[in-house]
Length: 385
Image (tube, rainbow, N blue to C red; front, side):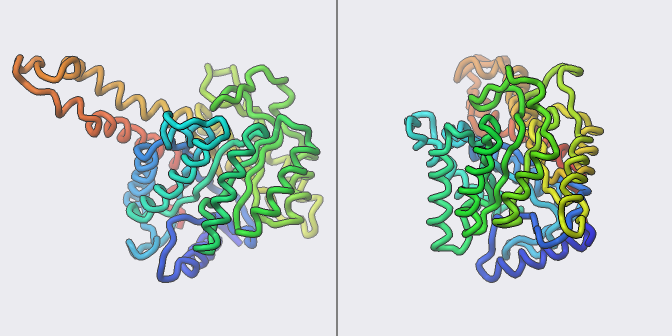
């Protein structure tokens, strides 16, 4: 079944699940349908209501410019492109406020839950279908993961769906055996309430959110096909609702050209290896994830998508985009921001309309919107039907 039919089936399923009450989040993967990768969905890290709203605005603008979307009872249009909003452990703590202690991950847990509820409400208002996801969770952060999973289970009891759409376990620093065993343990619990699992095998280099992999052995940045298959074999025995972040030279952050060597063609080898192992040899049986997408060339992105990547993380570029609007506003209006009264127009002229946070924060939102729209275009996540 091709992508057009795939999305029509997903849209029908979503509409049936929404019923009269409506839903603002869902999992855009439908593992019951053969997946032939032609596009992927950008996953943008959000750290505040401002950044979350800007990402939703970008998705709505893309939809309004190129196609329409149906979600809940807010608008009656056809769903054609979701967006992924995700929170990291550090971003979650920031969302709830830096004044909250986090020695037991309490700030990260509370922040992730707060972000999830905000995004659910906002997504309905914007009319945007959202995959709500949590990003890298290393072994030392499992207390954060446990807290989110408990919130999912509590929400499921009342709403027959989890609070989040999916969560990621990143145990790539552990042995392959421990990585898979821990994923299996959590996935059994997650699958009972319909949660999707993203896991990582092979290490993403660079530094992000307090996890520093800048000094790892270069060979660890390239996952082997056998390891990917071992993950697939273990998790598919529980549920088909999982994706694999297999390393192909990925590095968090943006670096000078030549310093990072991505090999997205390796993903095709993973697909072929697993395909040959499975009964019926299904085409592109793996849902793959592209980490460290910021700074990648459009050719690298296209190759990755063609080899089965369905999700690409975009964080560093969107952080810089958010800064750019605020930076430019401050530099251009600095003479209006030095004091409350008095500017080049007169010593008695008030400056409130310049230093009001709603003014300069909005400038950051505008440039973030532009960058998210670019990510959608790069991933061919535009006008899908």
